Amino acid sequence: MPPQAYDIPRLLPLGDSAWTVEFAGHIDPTIHGRVMALDARVDDARRHDPAFAGVVDTVPSFRSLTVHFLPDPDPLALGERLLALARGAEAAILGGRSWRLPACFDAALAPDLAAVAERHGTTPEEVVRALCRTEFRVYMIGFMPGFPYMGGLPTELHTPRLGTPRKLVPARSIAIAGEMCAVYPWPSPGGWNLLGQTPIDLFVADDDPPALLAAGDSVRWQAVDRREYARIERALAHGELHRQNFLREGQT
Amino acid sequence: MSGCLEVIDGGLDNSIQDAGRYGYRHMGVAVSGFLDPLFAACANALVGNGNAAAAIEIRGCGLGLAVRHGPLRVALSGPLSASVLRHGGSRQELDAWQSATLETGDVLRCGAVNGGTAYLAVSGGIDVAPQLGSRATHRRTGIGGIAGRLLATGDALPCPRLAGNACREYRAEPWRHLDGPIRVIPGPQADHFTNGEFERLLASPYRVTRDSDRMGMRLDGPALVHRSPTHVDIVSDAVAPGALQVPGNGQPILLLADCQTVGGYPKIATVIRADLPRLGQCRTGDELRFAKIDLPQALAIQRRESERLARWQNAIATCQPASYLDEAALYTCNLIDGMVRAEPPTHD
Image (cartoon, rainbow over all chains, first blue to last red):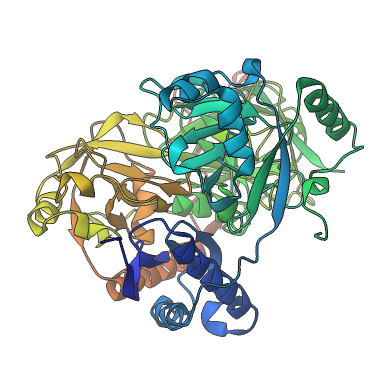
């Protein structure tokens, strides 16, 4: 039997400074839709409901929303209000932004592409085509600032982490592990399989907003060659292009 | 004109912190900020600042500062003292829990913090440019403070100058942290462990290992066994400072201010807010004991601690500045010999 959502959402204390409202134990786009619907309702309540005056952060994740708060005015009342909002939070149509982000899958930028193709009995070209056909959903930003956990990877590309993590993953590497796709915002150690690179920065502290992607966004990769990759990189550096230019048409 | 403190010796593990960076955790940005907000609030209060003003968090040794544009008032809190070399050549000891006014050309050298956390507050606060709404340094991601890193020799720390020198200083009794066990609230994933495992957590001391920093402390004690192998991992969700994560080896990791925003290990329990400052004073080898409480109890403890801090701040007394020892002058005048005590009078 496939995993089910809980009959009623669970309200879990994360100490005395946060509540986690959990809808299910597994990863599922519908569950995440409810998480994002609750996030929107909390956002709205923070504007007018005094019970939410102590809320300092809300963190959506795959199957739950965590609401961090200060001790005032009343965390117990806040918990009750959260649970009431959660019960009515139905999966909304994804309200996030929709991105088409350039990605270069040139072998020099994709150290694990050949091995991933071989593992699944296919060619690097076919892996790239499958990646670019996929509409990825951003479930959560975490691990480091701007790091997106994106679901939707086709089953035939599900791949375990590397046996030995790399000491240094280059910034803006596109990577897969398990059923997830992600991008490393800056150089860091990491155990995911590296399939390419994007010329777009995932986190720029002095931009508003600093993180390119947010939970609820959707992302499609658009394959570009090395030359186009370098052109975009340069144009971004010189301010001739902006990150927002990669939103799909009709969005701001 | 603005004041300026120059770092003449960055020492080890010293950083600019404040009350933390809120409003960005959904983007994966850690809160960071003071490891011990109570000690920080004390140092800030001694120089007339609010609790959240940016100060220097001292976790290592060797910090040396020179006043380039004074006067400034400074105060230390925590397990540390410093010496002040006046621009005139005299020397003065500066203990924690009292303020001193420094003039242009004065040099302050801090001793070592041997485990634990101390603070140096400056009147008006350290005024580096905030990043994402806070001056707190998060070293791992290079955000806040000065270029997101520890203090280094040559850094210039802007801070407002004192308007006039009222020729008085401030002092208070050392702040005493609560003692007894560290209080936790079970969860959010206490159900990934059998009841017996939770009892084990409460019954045994857990030792702070060397593998500890501002992100968290790895603890060493009886292993906590997950309910089943499938309970070792969770679908990642949000974490917070104070969370006790338990990875597969059963040895808990106690998260602190610089922790990531999300994690994939079950959290058996979470330390209450009022006890987080105490964790900032832990040293390698310390033994922690945990006690279980519920949310209403935690909120009551937090209220009492806030009131206790307000009482401490109200009890700050003014005192005359320590008379600066001008040894050359004293010897010349032949007024005294032997030991000289330079403690300020304790009236007021």
